[in-house]
Image 1 (cartoon, rainbow, N blue to C red):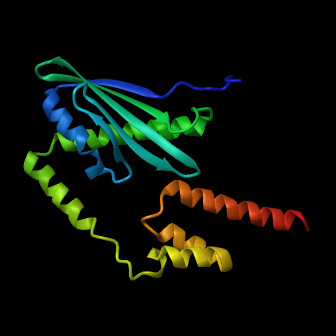
Image 2 (tube, rainbow, N blue to C red):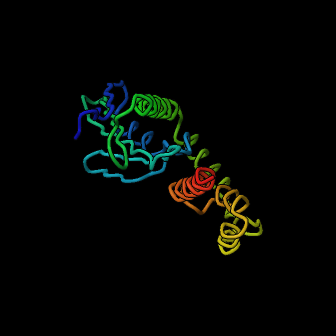
Image 3 (cartoon, rainbow, N blue to C red):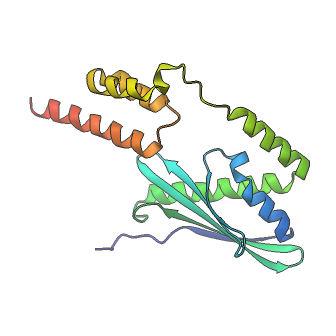
Length: 188
């Protein structure tokens, strides 16, 4: 049953920074890579989890655990795990290893920044996350429903442009229409 299951990719490194500085960097990974969203932070045990969506997948969790080695040295443990199922294909491992590399890169960039620079990044991030302008046609959910029923190509385009609709719903809807198209061609 679980013959082809590959263990979750992991990476462990030690760096010459105090744990408090590393914590601040890890907590702000989303400022460097917008793909990573805060999922679950546990400051007591220094465990930080982010989530990221992937194409044709429900995505992955990036678990980061910090340990103090000494006053100026910290161990960072990163594990990538799938939201649903397990890793069983080589391209999934390649993607997971890319998540590890991107996470370590974001941490290293943030470690070199001062608290003022990090606050500046936060301010820029908040400025860029302005409320979605609902005057666009693709932001109106009722219109998207009608378009998905009667003019599905435009409805599907609008679903993908809409920022409020989650990635898994977009993927499921796309797969549904792909299946309908497949059935219509295969019946002929």
